[in-house]
Amino acid sequence: MAQIEIRLPKMGESVTEATITNWLKNVGDTVDMDEPLVEVATDKVDNELPSEAAGVLVKRLFEKDQVAQVGDVIAIISTEGDSGSVASDPTKEVSNPVASATEITKTIEQAVATVNGSSEEISKNGPSGKFYSPLVRSIAEREAISMNELETINGSGQAGRVTKKDILDFVDNRGSQPVAATASVSTNNVITPAPSAAAPLTASSPTSAVTNSFLSNIKEPVVMPNPGDEIIEMDRMRKIIAEHMVMSKHVSPHVTSYVEADVTNIVNWRNKVKNEFMKREGENITFTPIFIEAIVKAIKDFPMINVSVSGTNIIKRKDINIGMATALPSGNLIVPVIKNADRLNLTGITKSVNELANNARNNQLKPEDIQGGTFTITNVGSFGNVMGTPIISQPQVAILAVGAIRKMPAVIETPHGDFIGIRHKMFLSHSYDHRVVDGSLGGQFVRRVADYLEQFDPNREL
Image (tube, rainbow, N blue to C red; front, top):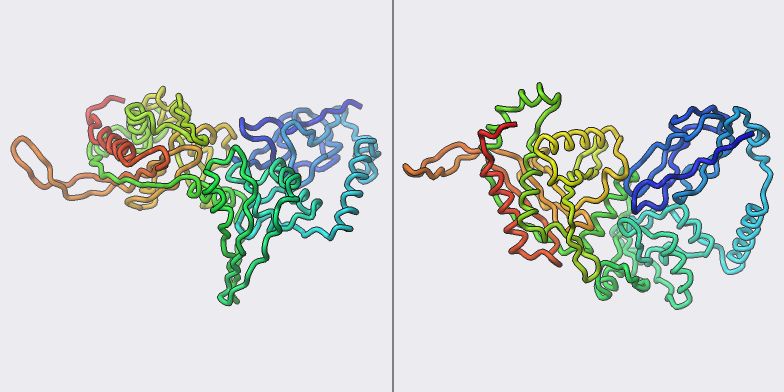
Protein backbone atom coordinates (compact mmCIF):
# COMPACT_ATOMS: atom_id res chain seq x y z
CA MET A 1 0.00 0.00 0.00
CA ALA A 2 1.63 3.25 -1.17
CA GLN A 3 1.40 6.10 1.30
CA ILE A 4 2.04 9.81 0.69
CA GLU A 5 3.15 12.12 3.48
CA ILE A 6 1.44 15.52 3.41
CA ARG A 7 3.75 18.13 4.90
CA LEU A 8 3.09 21.65 6.07
CA PRO A 9 4.43 23.79 3.19
CA LYS A 10 6.40 26.99 3.47
CA MET A 11 3.94 29.89 3.53
CA GLY A 12 6.16 32.95 3.47
CA GLU A 13 9.66 34.05 4.46
CA SER A 14 8.99 34.70 8.13
CA VAL A 15 6.38 32.00 8.67
CA THR A 16 7.83 28.99 10.53
CA GLU A 17 4.71 27.43 12.02
CA ALA A 18 0.95 27.25 11.61
CA THR A 19 -2.01 26.28 13.76
CA ILE A 20 -4.40 23.62 12.49
CA THR A 21 -7.78 25.35 12.65
CA ASN A 22 -10.03 22.81 10.91
CA TRP A 23 -9.74 19.45 9.16
CA LEU A 24 -11.91 19.33 6.05
CA LYS A 25 -11.54 15.55 5.74
CA ASN A 26 -11.88 12.78 8.31
CA VAL A 27 -9.80 9.60 8.52
CA GLY A 28 -11.19 7.17 5.95
CA ASP A 29 -12.50 9.89 3.61
CA THR A 30 -11.58 9.86 -0.06
CA VAL A 31 -9.50 12.86 -1.13
CA ASP A 32 -8.95 14.10 -4.68
CA MET A 33 -5.78 15.75 -5.95
CA ASP A 34 -5.79 19.49 -5.09
CA GLU A 35 -8.97 19.11 -3.04
CA PRO A 36 -8.90 21.25 0.14
CA LEU A 37 -7.71 19.03 2.99
CA VAL A 38 -7.10 21.23 6.03
CA GLU A 39 -7.39 24.86 7.13
CA VAL A 40 -4.37 26.40 8.85
CA ALA A 41 -3.70 29.79 10.40
CA THR A 42 -0.43 31.68 10.65
CA ASP A 43 0.40 35.02 12.25
CA LYS A 44 -0.26 36.61 8.86
CA VAL A 45 -3.15 34.90 7.07
CA ASP A 46 -5.50 31.90 7.07
CA ASN A 47 -5.14 29.30 4.32
CA GLU A 48 -6.73 26.16 2.93
CA LEU A 49 -4.10 23.55 2.07
CA PRO A 50 -4.92 21.31 -0.90
CA SER A 51 -4.12 17.61 -1.00
CA GLU A 52 -0.95 16.72 -2.89
CA ALA A 53 -2.30 13.29 -3.83
CA ALA A 54 -5.52 11.41 -4.56
CA GLY A 55 -6.50 8.57 -2.26
CA VAL A 56 -7.80 7.89 1.23
CA LEU A 57 -6.84 9.88 4.32
CA VAL A 58 -5.48 7.23 6.69
CA LYS A 59 -3.88 9.33 9.41
CA ARG A 60 -3.91 12.84 10.86
CA LEU A 61 -0.79 13.62 12.86
CA PHE A 62 -2.03 16.98 14.20
CA GLU A 63 -5.47 17.78 15.51
CA LYS A 64 -7.40 21.06 15.71
CA ASP A 65 -5.61 23.88 17.58
CA GLN A 66 -2.26 22.07 17.51
CA VAL A 67 0.78 23.87 16.08
CA ALA A 68 2.87 22.31 13.28
CA GLN A 69 6.24 23.51 12.07
CA VAL A 70 6.94 24.09 8.37
CA GLY A 71 8.02 20.73 6.95
CA ASP A 72 6.20 18.61 9.55
CA VAL A 73 4.14 15.69 8.26
CA ILE A 74 0.54 16.57 9.13
CA ALA A 75 -1.31 13.75 7.37
CA ILE A 76 -0.83 10.50 5.46
CA ILE A 77 -2.80 9.55 2.35
CA SER A 78 -3.01 6.05 0.91
CA THR A 79 -2.91 6.27 -2.88
CA GLU A 80 -4.30 2.76 -3.42
CA GLY A 81 -7.70 3.58 -2.02
CA ASP A 82 -7.32 1.06 0.84
CA SER A 83 -7.06 2.61 4.27
CA GLY A 84 -5.92 -0.70 5.72
CA SER A 85 -5.67 -1.38 9.41
CA VAL A 86 -4.64 2.20 10.16
CA ALA A 87 -7.93 3.68 9.02
CA SER A 88 -10.10 0.87 10.37
CA ASP A 89 -9.51 1.97 13.96
CA PRO A 90 -7.36 5.04 14.48
CA THR A 91 -7.24 4.40 18.24
CA LYS A 92 -5.38 1.09 17.76
CA GLU A 93 -2.35 2.29 15.87
CA VAL A 94 0.88 0.42 16.38
CA SER A 95 3.30 2.71 18.18
CA ASN A 96 6.85 3.07 16.92
CA PRO A 97 9.97 3.31 19.10
CA VAL A 98 10.22 7.09 18.66
CA ALA A 99 6.63 7.66 19.70
CA SER A 100 7.07 5.35 22.68
CA ALA A 101 10.16 7.22 23.81
CA THR A 102 8.32 10.50 23.49
CA GLU A 103 5.44 9.24 25.59
CA ILE A 104 7.82 7.90 28.25
CA THR A 105 9.63 11.24 28.40
CA LYS A 106 6.34 13.09 28.69
CA THR A 107 5.21 10.80 31.51
CA ILE A 108 8.45 11.35 33.41
CA GLU A 109 8.23 15.13 32.97
CA GLN A 110 4.63 15.13 34.19
CA ALA A 111 5.66 13.08 37.22
CA VAL A 112 8.45 15.54 38.02
CA ALA A 113 6.05 18.44 37.66
CA THR A 114 3.66 16.73 40.06
CA VAL A 115 6.42 16.33 42.65
CA ASN A 116 7.51 19.96 42.28
CA GLY A 117 3.95 21.24 42.41
CA SER A 118 1.08 20.90 39.94
CA SER A 119 1.28 23.20 36.93
CA GLU A 120 -1.30 25.90 36.28
CA GLU A 121 -3.53 25.44 33.25
CA ILE A 122 -2.55 28.22 30.84
CA SER A 123 -5.29 29.92 28.84
CA LYS A 124 -4.60 30.96 25.26
CA ASN A 125 -4.94 34.65 26.19
CA GLY A 126 -3.15 36.20 29.14
CA PRO A 127 -4.40 39.12 31.28
CA SER A 128 -2.50 41.52 29.00
CA GLY A 129 -4.29 40.17 25.93
CA LYS A 130 -1.23 38.29 24.63
CA PHE A 131 -2.02 35.18 22.60
CA TYR A 132 -0.13 31.99 23.50
CA SER A 133 0.05 29.19 20.96
CA PRO A 134 -0.85 25.60 21.97
CA LEU A 135 2.85 24.68 21.80
CA VAL A 136 3.89 27.48 24.18
CA ARG A 137 1.01 26.65 26.55
CA SER A 138 1.94 22.97 26.66
CA ILE A 139 5.57 23.82 27.48
CA ALA A 140 4.43 26.27 30.17
CA GLU A 141 2.18 23.67 31.77
CA ARG A 142 4.87 20.98 31.54
CA GLU A 143 7.47 23.26 33.16
CA ALA A 144 4.99 24.55 35.78
CA ILE A 145 5.33 28.11 34.49
CA SER A 146 2.57 30.32 35.86
CA MET A 147 0.62 32.81 33.78
CA ASN A 148 2.28 35.65 35.72
CA GLU A 149 5.71 34.34 34.73
CA LEU A 150 4.61 33.78 31.13
CA GLU A 151 3.47 37.39 30.89
CA THR A 152 6.99 38.61 31.74
CA ILE A 153 8.57 36.92 28.71
CA ASN A 154 9.46 39.34 25.89
CA GLY A 155 8.37 37.52 22.73
CA SER A 156 10.50 37.66 19.59
CA GLY A 157 7.72 36.43 17.28
CA GLN A 158 5.24 38.35 15.12
CA ALA A 159 3.66 41.20 17.10
CA GLY A 160 5.72 40.26 20.18
CA ARG A 161 4.32 36.74 20.36
CA VAL A 162 6.19 34.29 22.62
CA THR A 163 7.81 31.56 20.53
CA LYS A 164 9.08 28.09 21.45
CA LYS A 165 12.65 29.47 21.61
CA ASP A 166 11.57 32.33 23.91
CA ILE A 167 9.95 30.06 26.47
CA LEU A 168 12.78 27.50 26.36
CA ASP A 169 15.31 30.31 26.91
CA PHE A 170 13.18 31.43 29.86
CA VAL A 171 13.24 27.91 31.28
CA ASP A 172 17.04 27.76 30.95
CA ASN A 173 17.45 31.08 32.83
CA ARG A 174 14.58 30.54 35.21
CA GLY A 175 16.76 30.02 38.24
CA SER A 176 17.75 33.69 38.23
CA GLN A 177 14.18 34.96 37.71
CA PRO A 178 12.38 36.33 40.80
CA VAL A 179 8.83 35.07 41.22
CA ALA A 180 6.27 37.59 40.02
CA ALA A 181 4.00 39.17 42.57
CA THR A 182 0.34 38.29 42.54
CA ALA A 183 -2.27 40.66 41.19
CA SER A 184 -3.88 43.15 43.53
CA VAL A 185 -7.66 43.52 43.34
CA SER A 186 -9.26 46.94 43.54
CA THR A 187 -12.85 47.69 44.47
CA ASN A 188 -13.95 49.16 41.14
CA ASN A 189 -14.18 45.94 39.11
CA VAL A 190 -10.65 46.36 37.73
CA ILE A 191 -7.84 43.94 38.55
CA THR A 192 -4.48 45.67 38.34
CA PRO A 193 -1.61 43.16 38.09
CA ALA A 194 1.40 44.09 40.18
CA PRO A 195 4.61 44.93 38.31
CA SER A 196 6.83 41.92 37.74
CA ALA A 197 10.53 41.59 37.03
CA ALA A 198 11.63 42.16 33.48
CA ALA A 199 12.65 39.13 31.43
CA PRO A 200 16.22 39.09 30.06
CA LEU A 201 16.63 41.32 27.02
CA THR A 202 17.49 39.75 23.69
CA ALA A 203 19.76 41.09 20.96
CA SER A 204 16.80 41.22 18.59
CA SER A 205 14.84 43.55 20.87
CA PRO A 206 13.79 46.66 18.87
CA THR A 207 13.95 49.08 21.79
CA SER A 208 16.62 50.03 24.27
CA ALA A 209 17.26 48.18 27.51
CA VAL A 210 15.77 51.05 29.51
CA THR A 211 12.62 51.11 27.40
CA ASN A 212 12.23 47.33 27.54
CA SER A 213 12.64 47.34 31.30
CA PHE A 214 9.95 49.99 31.61
CA LEU A 215 7.52 48.34 29.21
CA SER A 216 7.87 44.93 30.79
CA ASN A 217 6.49 46.40 34.04
CA ILE A 218 3.37 47.78 32.36
CA LYS A 219 0.36 45.58 32.99
CA GLU A 220 -2.98 46.01 31.30
CA PRO A 221 -5.88 46.10 33.78
CA VAL A 222 -8.33 43.22 33.58
CA VAL A 223 -11.88 44.59 33.67
CA MET A 224 -14.52 42.50 35.39
CA PRO A 225 -17.97 42.45 33.73
CA ASN A 226 -21.01 43.83 35.48
CA PRO A 227 -24.33 41.94 35.62
CA GLY A 228 -26.01 42.02 32.21
CA ASP A 229 -22.81 42.80 30.29
CA GLU A 230 -22.14 40.74 27.18
CA ILE A 231 -18.69 39.18 26.81
CA ILE A 232 -17.52 38.79 23.22
CA GLU A 233 -14.26 36.96 22.71
CA MET A 234 -11.97 38.50 20.10
CA ASP A 235 -11.53 36.39 17.00
CA ARG A 236 -8.01 35.36 16.03
CA MET A 237 -7.44 38.19 13.54
CA ARG A 238 -8.60 40.84 16.01
CA LYS A 239 -6.13 39.48 18.60
CA ILE A 240 -3.28 39.69 16.11
CA ILE A 241 -4.25 43.26 15.13
CA ALA A 242 -4.44 44.26 18.79
CA GLU A 243 -1.02 42.80 19.56
CA HIS A 244 0.56 44.39 16.49
CA MET A 245 -0.90 47.85 17.18
CA VAL A 246 0.17 47.84 20.85
CA MET A 247 3.64 46.69 19.86
CA SER A 248 3.90 49.43 17.23
CA LYS A 249 2.99 52.18 19.68
CA HIS A 250 5.52 50.81 22.18
CA VAL A 251 8.30 50.56 19.61
CA SER A 252 7.80 53.79 17.62
CA PRO A 253 7.25 57.29 19.00
CA HIS A 254 4.45 58.43 16.69
CA VAL A 255 4.20 61.96 15.26
CA THR A 256 1.45 63.03 12.84
CA SER A 257 1.58 65.91 10.33
CA TYR A 258 -1.45 67.17 8.40
CA VAL A 259 -1.94 68.98 5.12
CA GLU A 260 -5.02 69.88 3.09
CA ALA A 261 -5.00 69.14 -0.63
CA ASP A 262 -7.18 70.51 -3.43
CA VAL A 263 -8.09 67.46 -5.52
CA THR A 264 -10.63 69.13 -7.82
CA ASN A 265 -8.67 68.18 -10.95
CA ILE A 266 -8.57 64.54 -9.86
CA VAL A 267 -12.31 64.40 -9.13
CA ASN A 268 -13.19 65.97 -12.47
CA TRP A 269 -10.77 63.72 -14.39
CA ARG A 270 -12.07 60.54 -12.78
CA ASN A 271 -15.68 61.51 -13.47
CA LYS A 272 -14.70 62.02 -17.11
CA VAL A 273 -12.84 58.72 -17.64
CA LYS A 274 -14.46 56.20 -15.30
CA ASN A 275 -17.03 54.94 -17.83
CA GLU A 276 -14.41 54.63 -20.56
CA PHE A 277 -12.11 52.79 -18.15
CA MET A 278 -14.87 50.36 -17.22
CA LYS A 279 -15.58 49.60 -20.89
CA ARG A 280 -11.91 49.13 -21.73
CA GLU A 281 -10.67 47.30 -18.63
CA GLY A 282 -13.84 45.79 -17.21
CA GLU A 283 -13.35 47.27 -13.74
CA ASN A 284 -13.68 50.50 -11.80
CA ILE A 285 -11.01 53.11 -11.31
CA THR A 286 -11.14 54.59 -7.81
CA PHE A 287 -9.19 57.40 -6.16
CA THR A 288 -6.88 54.99 -4.31
CA PRO A 289 -4.61 54.20 -7.30
CA ILE A 290 -4.15 57.93 -7.92
CA PHE A 291 -3.19 58.47 -4.28
CA ILE A 292 -0.73 55.57 -4.44
CA GLU A 293 0.84 56.98 -7.62
CA ALA A 294 1.44 60.30 -5.82
CA ILE A 295 2.90 58.52 -2.77
CA VAL A 296 5.33 56.58 -4.98
CA LYS A 297 6.52 59.80 -6.63
CA ALA A 298 7.03 61.44 -3.22
CA ILE A 299 8.97 58.41 -1.93
CA LYS A 300 11.35 58.77 -4.85
CA ASP A 301 11.87 62.40 -3.82
CA PHE A 302 12.29 61.48 -0.13
CA PRO A 303 13.70 57.92 -0.04
CA MET A 304 14.45 58.07 3.71
CA ILE A 305 10.72 57.61 4.29
CA ASN A 306 11.06 54.16 2.71
CA VAL A 307 13.16 52.66 5.52
CA SER A 308 13.02 50.29 8.49
CA VAL A 309 14.82 50.31 11.84
CA SER A 310 16.84 47.37 13.17
CA GLY A 311 18.36 48.24 16.54
CA THR A 312 20.60 51.23 15.79
CA ASN A 313 20.74 50.50 12.06
CA ILE A 314 18.54 52.07 9.37
CA ILE A 315 17.64 49.77 6.48
CA LYS A 316 17.02 51.83 3.35
CA ARG A 317 14.64 49.84 1.15
CA LYS A 318 15.37 49.42 -2.54
CA ASP A 319 11.85 48.34 -3.48
CA ILE A 320 8.77 50.51 -3.08
CA ASN A 321 6.01 48.19 -1.86
CA ILE A 322 2.80 49.97 -0.92
CA GLY A 323 0.48 48.38 1.63
CA MET A 324 -3.16 49.40 1.50
CA ALA A 325 -5.28 48.92 4.61
CA THR A 326 -8.46 47.06 3.65
CA ALA A 327 -11.55 46.67 5.82
CA LEU A 328 -13.04 43.18 5.82
CA PRO A 329 -16.75 42.30 6.10
CA SER A 330 -16.03 41.00 9.62
CA GLY A 331 -14.92 44.49 10.66
CA ASN A 332 -11.28 43.43 10.91
CA LEU A 333 -8.43 44.96 8.93
CA ILE A 334 -5.78 43.48 6.66
CA VAL A 335 -3.02 45.14 4.64
CA PRO A 336 -2.29 43.56 1.23
CA VAL A 337 0.80 44.89 -0.52
CA ILE A 338 1.36 46.16 -4.07
CA LYS A 339 4.91 45.04 -4.83
CA ASN A 340 7.21 47.32 -6.85
CA ALA A 341 4.51 49.93 -7.25
CA ASP A 342 7.01 52.30 -8.84
CA ARG A 343 7.21 49.99 -11.87
CA LEU A 344 3.47 50.16 -12.57
CA ASN A 345 1.53 52.78 -14.51
CA LEU A 346 -1.83 54.03 -13.26
CA THR A 347 -3.74 51.24 -14.99
CA GLY A 348 -1.44 48.62 -13.47
CA ILE A 349 -1.82 50.10 -9.99
CA THR A 350 -5.61 50.17 -10.44
CA LYS A 351 -5.75 46.51 -11.39
CA SER A 352 -3.52 45.56 -8.46
CA VAL A 353 -5.64 47.58 -6.03
CA ASN A 354 -8.88 45.99 -7.24
CA GLU A 355 -7.50 42.45 -7.28
CA LEU A 356 -5.99 42.63 -3.79
CA ALA A 357 -9.06 44.31 -2.31
CA ASN A 358 -11.40 41.67 -3.79
CA ASN A 359 -9.17 38.81 -2.65
CA ALA A 360 -9.00 40.30 0.84
CA ARG A 361 -12.78 40.56 1.15
CA ASN A 362 -13.21 36.99 -0.17
CA ASN A 363 -10.49 35.56 2.12
CA GLN A 364 -8.38 34.56 -0.89
CA LEU A 365 -5.13 36.36 -0.07
CA LYS A 366 -1.92 34.35 -0.13
CA PRO A 367 0.72 34.81 2.59
CA GLU A 368 3.04 36.62 0.17
CA ASP A 369 0.24 39.12 -0.62
CA ILE A 370 0.57 40.72 2.82
CA GLN A 371 4.35 40.63 3.21
CA GLY A 372 7.13 43.04 2.33
CA GLY A 373 5.34 46.37 2.63
CA THR A 374 7.58 49.43 2.94
CA PHE A 375 4.92 52.18 3.24
CA THR A 376 1.17 52.02 3.92
CA ILE A 377 -1.87 54.05 2.89
CA THR A 378 -5.18 53.86 4.74
CA ASN A 379 -8.37 55.47 3.41
CA VAL A 380 -10.26 56.77 6.44
CA GLY A 381 -12.35 58.86 4.05
CA SER A 382 -14.20 55.72 2.94
CA PHE A 383 -15.96 55.84 6.33
CA GLY A 384 -16.76 59.55 6.05
CA ASN A 385 -13.86 60.63 8.29
CA VAL A 386 -12.04 63.83 7.35
CA MET A 387 -8.73 62.82 8.97
CA GLY A 388 -7.17 60.29 11.33
CA THR A 389 -4.04 59.42 13.28
CA PRO A 390 -3.04 56.04 11.85
CA ILE A 391 -0.69 53.63 13.64
CA ILE A 392 2.47 52.58 11.80
CA SER A 393 2.58 49.04 10.47
CA GLN A 394 5.91 47.67 11.74
CA PRO A 395 8.63 47.39 10.57
CA GLN A 396 7.72 50.38 8.38
CA VAL A 397 8.33 53.91 9.68
CA ALA A 398 5.39 55.80 8.15
CA ILE A 399 1.74 55.54 7.14
CA LEU A 400 -0.53 58.01 5.32
CA ALA A 401 -4.25 58.39 5.99
CA VAL A 402 -6.40 60.02 3.29
CA GLY A 403 -9.61 61.66 4.44
CA ALA A 404 -12.99 62.18 2.84
CA ILE A 405 -13.16 64.42 -0.25
CA ARG A 406 -15.52 67.31 0.46
CA LYS A 407 -16.80 70.29 -1.49
CA MET A 408 -15.47 73.41 0.21
CA PRO A 409 -15.56 77.16 -0.49
CA ALA A 410 -12.01 78.32 -1.23
CA VAL A 411 -10.10 81.35 -2.38
CA ILE A 412 -8.87 80.82 -5.95
CA GLU A 413 -5.95 82.90 -7.15
CA THR A 414 -5.95 83.87 -10.82
CA PRO A 415 -3.99 86.39 -12.96
CA HIS A 416 -7.12 88.54 -12.88
CA GLY A 417 -7.51 88.50 -9.11
CA ASP A 418 -8.82 86.28 -6.34
CA PHE A 419 -12.33 84.93 -6.11
CA ILE A 420 -14.34 82.39 -4.09
CA GLY A 421 -15.13 79.06 -5.71
CA ILE A 422 -16.29 75.56 -4.84
CA ARG A 423 -13.37 73.12 -4.69
CA HIS A 424 -12.96 69.44 -3.77
CA LYS A 425 -10.62 69.20 -0.80
CA MET A 426 -9.27 66.53 1.52
CA PHE A 427 -6.89 66.17 4.47
CA LEU A 428 -3.80 63.96 4.45
CA SER A 429 -2.59 62.67 7.84
CA HIS A 430 0.99 61.38 7.92
CA SER A 431 2.11 59.39 10.97
CA TYR A 432 5.83 58.63 11.21
CA ASP A 433 8.43 57.10 13.51
CA HIS A 434 10.21 59.95 15.30
CA ARG A 435 13.24 57.74 15.97
CA VAL A 436 14.34 58.18 12.35
CA VAL A 437 11.87 60.62 10.77
CA ASP A 438 11.89 64.17 12.10
CA GLY A 439 9.20 66.77 11.55
CA SER A 440 11.07 68.29 8.63
CA LEU A 441 11.17 65.08 6.60
CA GLY A 442 7.72 63.89 7.70
CA GLY A 443 6.13 67.26 6.95
CA GLN A 444 7.90 67.80 3.62
CA PHE A 445 6.92 64.31 2.45
CA VAL A 446 3.19 64.73 3.03
CA ARG A 447 3.33 68.22 1.50
CA ARG A 448 4.97 66.73 -1.59
CA VAL A 449 2.21 64.11 -1.88
CA ALA A 450 -0.35 66.93 -1.73
CA ASP A 451 1.57 68.87 -4.40
CA TYR A 452 1.47 65.88 -6.78
CA LEU A 453 -2.26 65.52 -6.20
CA GLU A 454 -2.94 69.22 -6.78
CA GLN A 455 -0.78 69.25 -9.94
CA PHE A 456 -2.67 66.31 -11.49
CA ASP A 457 -3.21 66.88 -15.21
CA PRO A 458 -6.98 67.09 -15.89
CA ASN A 459 -6.30 66.36 -19.58
CA ARG A 460 -4.34 63.20 -18.88
CA GLU A 461 -4.95 60.25 -21.23
CA LEU A 462 -5.64 56.79 -19.90
